[in-house]
Structure formats: structure tokens, C-alpha cells
Amino acid sequence: MTEQSQNLALEARGIQKTFRQGPKDVHVLHDVNLQLAAGRSLAIVGASGAGKSTLLHILGGLDKPDRGEVLVEGQSIWELSSADRGQMRNRTMGFVYQFHHLLPEFTALENVAMPLLIRGMKPADAAVRAAEILDKVGLSARLHHKPGELSGGERQRAALARALSGSPRVVLGDEPTGNLDERTADHVYGLLLELNRELKTSLLLVTHDKRLAARMDQRLELHMGCLQKMA
Image (cartoon, rainbow, N blue to C red):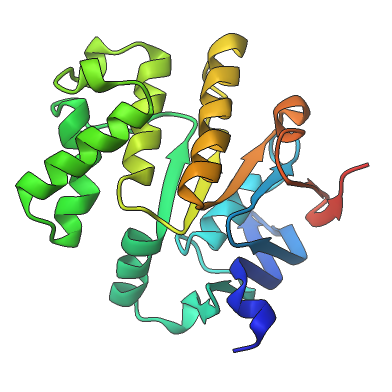
């Protein structure tokens, strides 16, 4: 492993992806390359349907590219078995989506503790860690509220806490503020960047919002299946 690759949290090399739609092949991603340094933030901007979510799923090991490779801290994730790739996601990655995907029958505390329980942490220790990270996102008074009892911004902050509960090295976000009003979106986005700096995790978000993307360390644009620097 080179010194440069050791300093990279996430790297994509030559990613290509094609989908079959009826009689036609739709080329979604063309030779996509990117590097995310440890502790840095990167925004990928693109219009709806540009392939942003597809790229994010490939970077997170949820979808396999037709060609190319993804490396997390120098490890090629598609060389891992399905079980090992799942463990890698649980231990090194956090995911935040446009819709919170919290489990409605569980409290905020239980939702945030769940990835830690899956990892094998003792329930008491998982609860303590979940309460700590919920406090960081301003939800210490809402630990025992279920998602239906939280506002939209609170639900998204709980989802952010869940993504960060396991101290991931990389957080991937798919339009994480796209379902919020502008003021709440600004608050959640600011919180993401604050935690990125405080916890020294690496952050990669895909978004259509150039205004919010401007607050990230790096900005790339996905257009016609290719990544390019934003003007």
C-alpha cells in the first residue's frame, strides 16, 4: 500500500455502470475516478437522474460496478466476500439518506443503538454510546421518543446520529437534507460539517443543491456519467 493510499479514506478507480432498459443499454457511469482524503468532505453535485445515487451505492458496497474498483482505506471492497463486505460497512461506514429510514416501533435511542448491537456491543454500552451521540445532535431530551413523535428535522438528526454511532471512518449521504425546508436543511448540513470536523470522519455527500455543496472541502459535478470539477 502506498503512502498516498494510506491517507485516503475512500477511492474509486475507473467505475463504469450500465443498466438495461428494454432493448437499450443506458450508460450511467463512465470511467469515474475520485479520491476522498481522511477527515475531508466532498460533495458530488448533479441533476436528478444523473446517476448520483447509483455512484453512492457503488461506493458504499451496496451495488457492484460493471468495471472498476472501490477502495476503503486501501482495501478493495469487491475483493471481499459478501459477509466480509457487510462487516466492513458496519464498522467503517455510516449512511444517511434523504428519508430517515428510522424503524417506527423503536425509540430514537434504540434506533441509534441498533448498529452497535449488530456489531456485538453489549446493550448497556450501546445505549450509553447512542445517548452520547444523540446529545451531540441536540436530541438529549428526545431519547425515548419514537420517530412519529419527532419533527422532520429531529428525525433526520436521529438518522445522522445512527450513522455516526459506530464512529465510522466514512459517512456517505444521499441528499440527506433534500426532504427538509431550507432553514432546517441549513441546520442539519451545518451539523454534518461540524461533526465531520469534530469526529474527524470523512464525509461524501451527493446533492443537487450547489449552495449547500459550496460548504464542503471539495466539489465535483456528475454530468453525462462523468465526474468533473465544478466551475
